[in-house]
Amino acid sequence: MIDFIIYSTTMISIWAVLGLSLNLQFGLTGLVNFGQVMPFAVGAYGAAFAATQGLPVWLGVVIGIVLAPLFGVLVILPARRLTQDYWALITLGAGELFRLTMENVPVIAGGIEGASVHRLGDRTLAMILALALLLAVLLIARRIAEGPLGRLLRVLREDETLAATLGRNPVRFQILVTVVSWTMAGAAGVLYAHVTGYVSPSSFMVIETFVIWTAVVLGGPGSNLGVILGTILVELTSVSTRFIAQWTDLPSDLIANLRLASFGLVLVLVFLYRPQGLIPEARKLYRVDDR
Amino acid sequence: MLTIADIRVSFGGFRALSGVSMTAAPGSILGIVGPNGSGKSTLINVVSGIQLPDSGTVRLDDRLVPLGRPDRIAAHGIARSFQVSRLARRLTVLQNMMVSARGNAGERLFDLFLRPAAVAAGEQGILTRAMEILRRLDLAHKANDYAGGLSGGQQKLLSLGMVLMSDPRVLLLDEPAAGVNPVLIEREVAFLKSLRAEGRIILLIEHNMEMIADLCDRVYVLDAGEVIAEGTPEAIRRDEQVMRSYLGQPA
Image (tube, helix red, strand yellow):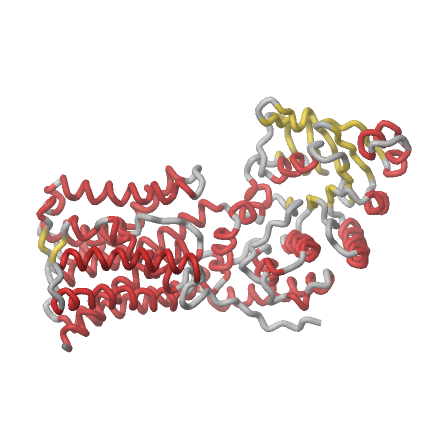
């Protein structure tokens, strides 16, 4: 039981980092990014590349964390003249492009077979690292969300043209946010690789982005605490469906599909009936003398 | 000196502006009047960078204004309001005001994380200035309300306040009095006069002819994308052609 709690806490923390990173882009800035699994994958593959090439672990960490935001900029630059609608398509495509490249170029990290990575043997240490990463990311996300930068990002979300006439270059800030967000997701990917000890293309399907989105939308776009709550609910549902598969006689792949279907249902219901999520974005109040 | 020279804009075959020119000296208010669809808002869109013209130039003190780049034009000290108010509706009135101040160190990652004291001091200064302007616009009691919840007239006043937060040299105001109640219009007029006295340039699109007559040093009449008359408000009122095109009746 204690092993299970440690494992769940580790995974929830890693996914909460992904949720917070997507929240910076979507919840705060309004960027519809359907490829958030990509920086996560880039981070994990940084670790896997280092392992296959016999490089030290720290170098894999650096490769993963540096390459993830770099890829983000590469994805955004061609999109900068397009309207936001295309963002979804471009990021979705980029994520798949990366995964398929990893699948078909075995020299990088084992191709479709995947690659083994040094696994953190001490599971408590893994959990502490995941919690520490989550805490660091939460502090950064809060500082951004609650300060002048977050205010500007929200204006970008509400009205890009307004932000431009106020003297801000929208693309500059979209790139800034993406670099910060994808660095966070890259770090989560590196840690994920060392927690599971194994990296393969099947871990980074489009469906994972969909799970991150469910957590953000359910919890409350624009609200960091909401996103963490959303992640906890979504991940606990994920974990518990595995028990359901054990207790009932239903085949586990059916249960897995039902789980995804239930996430889809949650998305639809939240969009319809509670678009602000479980913990809505708080209104920023100033103490003022209003006379 | 603001110099707008030979601005031409066409949308497909439709010529929205065909060679519009005007000049404004520091400390003056230019009125732009004309029927709906005459190109008034298009002209302001060009000067503020939202609409790239087919040809023509805009200069501020002999420096070319980078047309088509609203963010860089704002840096030249040219600020605008919109006919249909553009606000961040899910932010408060005060947040809208504060984000309109330019050069906030807290928008840079480096300062945000490594110079928190400087960022906090900057925010306090911006907050004080925002509240001063809100008081002048009779919006101080709405400071912590969502901007999207304001009435149309209040949104117009907030837009004017946001323009002022950037301390602009040139104000482009698109119907600032539409939907504003008469008492507040008087206050707005007094406000605009004080801005003129500070040496700012104001381009004012307005249908309220009384306000135009009261405020403007010169008036330009646009019709079908062309300047058909210009002069003092009194001269324009006497001009028969203007009255026909704008008011649809002889003077």
